[in-house]
Length: 222
Ligand code: DHB
Ligand code: MG
Image 1 (cartoon, rainbow, N blue to C red):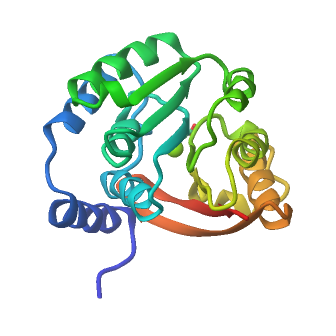
Image 2: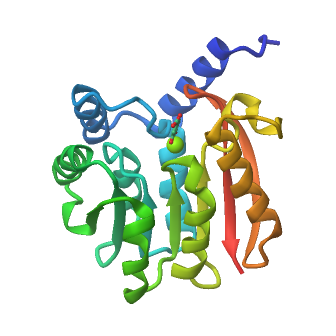
């Protein structure tokens, strides 16, 4: 049996991506553009992008909200799943990131399906209440605000809306209740809200792979 260590997690993840996801010029170009623009390589792994794509399709979601665009990698994955009449509304705080994402999303051929809203999500989200509800919400931004984003996900969703929260494992740090890392305390607060708030029914999965040891929470708005 292979020893469990990051090198093997990576090799297995690469094998899974090679076998199940394959190569994708538009997505790989988006990652190159993101890197050239100096953004951190914190986009979801290929297998996780494919998971987001499948969750959109499994749930039949037509309107997707993403909080945290970065270079548009996960945006492209989800835009490919919403159908011709679908929409991904994605919120990005950094205008320079949004410009890079816009170009990559357009180059991927899904530009007409994606609206990028530039600004701090906590300030952009209230305006979305005037629009049609969202069927799936992907939260992948500043972890300190996860409870605010979850509250908006419930308010902007409907019974049956799927909510996905990225980065809930943080190398195991989330089991430390005395952590002074605001990303850890924000992540814990979000998970505790998912467990306690009657608007949600949730679970979470730990993941290992090219992104190290982390995880994803998946919830249903009930
Ligand atoms: C961080 C944020 C992310 O969304 C991610 O996928 C990985 C790391 C971070 O801020 O450390
Ligand atoms: Mg993330």
